[in-house]
Length: 495
Ligand SMILES: *Cc1c(COP(=O)(O)O)cnc(C)c1O
Image (tube, rainbow, N blue to C red; front, side, top):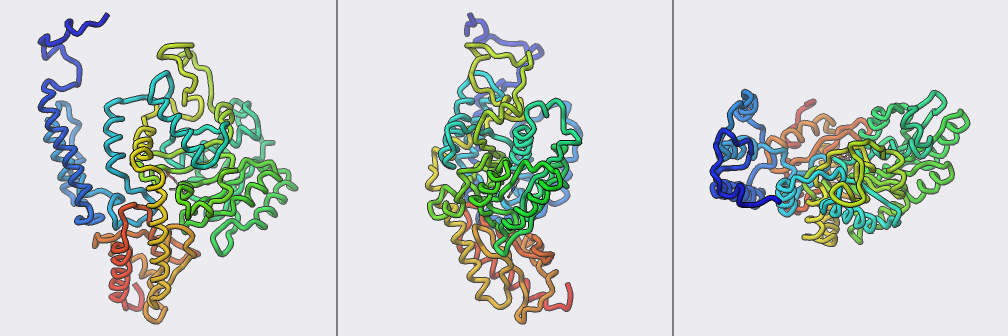
């Protein structure tokens, strides 16, 4: 039996020691508290700092150093972090951040990350409590989306990975488990469907799967940015007549450009009629079901076969925390389980446990993403998260109204959720579209608000994606004010 006395207090020769633990835990403790306080201060005073600032060359040069052969003091290393990393983040935690679609993170999530780091759990499998925490999240996720008891799920890096895994699952469902060994044959002729507004990670999933992105039919959208149902049905019928094998239909619950939600009820019907796996990419919007006010927008999401979404976007869990929910967890096993000898299971003991995530997804070693998610859901509750999403959408609607009242601005897409795409068009409506890319660059440099630039029908658009729980009306006002100011300074013939 291990006894404390054997090692306790015994002086260990410095040269025999290989442990990386500190000699002086007291000093470490002090330094650790300083680091923690520092981050609290940073988060507490965020709004007084720029959203983003360009990292100067001395900062970049710090990270072009030689490989450290000998170690340095933790306090010194932390000082480098404070000076050269902390001020030069991408800004997504800041209330003025509206670029792309990124979550703001929370203090609770940060603390949970620290605990998870201390535990250093590996959630590939085995019998330990962290696995139970992930299972708790799966059960809660089932409840959030009204999925049946048969449903399973798994944490992944993000929705890009979750969409990819869903393609693998759909492929196995259509062609059978043997396809894992045989690969696709010339006769497979798999084809899938999504709208032309589907996120770029979806065609990439087809490239990575070996099916090929040409086999993803990108269907036109209607004026609301939703997949055109008639065009979809025609495309499926045409493919069937030509001897292809339609196997997968992908709906969007919040398109990346404009936040449009496809008609998920209609898509379920089409998937049933043609024996397709019905997957939903809900990276951006799906968690909106937590808001009573927003939930009706996602009608039908409860009936999909698999759902990719991100706790790290609207869920505000710190990066990364993507998730795939699957209607029948057996489909996951069929796609991923294998019986390697070094992973053999025991009836009891550490090698026991009846749910090993490595059987349900592509990863073996996996971090404890479930802990920061569990802390977030427990400490805030899903009501507060839903309220924050409603508040984001309200700000988006107000912004859209403001744009429509302002002759120099033009709303470029309907606002279904939390994304507003617009352009500066000048007082007479004739401003060259290129001005808008300049405006966005200037806004980034000024550091008060940071929208991003996208293109809608080939036209540059300023895109404000309001995802952060810290964003307020004053940030929206600052956006409008700054766009008008910078735009009015651009009275040049061409920019
Ligand atoms: C962000 C996003 C993705 C990709 O998700 P990651 O978590 O960044 O991998 C996919 N689809 C949509 C609609 C997104 O907004």
